[in-house]
Length: 350
Image (cartoon, rainbow, N blue to C red; front, side, top):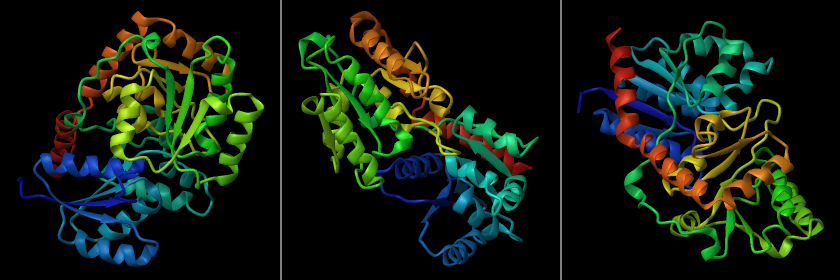
C-alpha cells in the first residue's frame, strides 16, 4: 500500500454490464497499484450521492469519476474546496453528449477544465471531447481485462463443427444489430450451415428487439438466429470459446457511440476474431486486418464480405486468433496498473 486513498465513483457495479465490468477492473487496477479504494455506486438521488461522495472525498487523495454526467458532475462538487484530486475517466457517450446539451454544456466544460486529469478510453473519445473543450489535455488509456480468467483456446477449422457468429450486448439500436443480421442473411446460401447467436438484454428497447425478430422472419433466417438473454458467465464463456467470429456493427446515433467496446476485448481474450465498425472507439479495440476487420457503419454488404473473408480462410482466421490473444494480453491488469500508477504518481507530485 502506498498510503494514498482513492474514491471510485461508479455508475453501477453489476458485472453483467459493460460499465459494471469496467468498475470491477478499475477496482483491481487501483488496488494492485497500492491504493486504498472506496467504491461508491450511483443511486437515483443525485444530491444524496453528492453528499455521501463529499464526506468520502474529504478523506481521500483522489476522486475518480466515470464520464461527465452524472459522475463527473458529482465528483466536481464532491472535491470542491478539498485537497482531493479529481480524475475523470471518459468511456463513451456520457462523456461527450453533455457538451452538446445547452443545459449542461457550460458546466461540463468547467468540470473538464477543473479536473486534475482527464483519461479517455479510446482516441476517438479523446478527439470528440477536444472538439468542444479545445486545448484540453486528454490522456488515452484503453480499458483492461483480467487475463487470469481466460484459458488459451484451441480453435479448429470452421468446417469441423457447426459454425456460428456471436454478438454480445444489449439489443438496442446503437449496437447496429439490424446491420449484422442483414449481413448474416446475405450469406445464407453461401454458408447454409452458419448460425447467428445474439446475447443481450431484450428489455432496454423492446420495440427494437421486436423489429429484429420480425426482420429475421422477413429475411428468411429466423430458424438460424438465436436471441439469448440472462446468460451466465459460464455459458457466455462457452459461447465465446465455440464461436467462429465475433461481430458488433455499432452505429453512431446523435452523440451516442461505441466508446471502445469491452466485448471486443473479451472476444480477443478468447482468441476470437472480430468484426466491428469504423468511426467510433472500436478502432482501439480491434486491430483492423490483424485481430479482425473494421467495416463502414450501416453497410451490410461490406460486413457480409468481411464475415466471408474470415470464415472462408482458415489460415487468416488462425493468424487473427493468435494476434487477438496477444492483443488481449497487452491489455492485462498489470499493464493497466503500470499506466495508472505512473499517471497518478505524477499528478499527486504536482
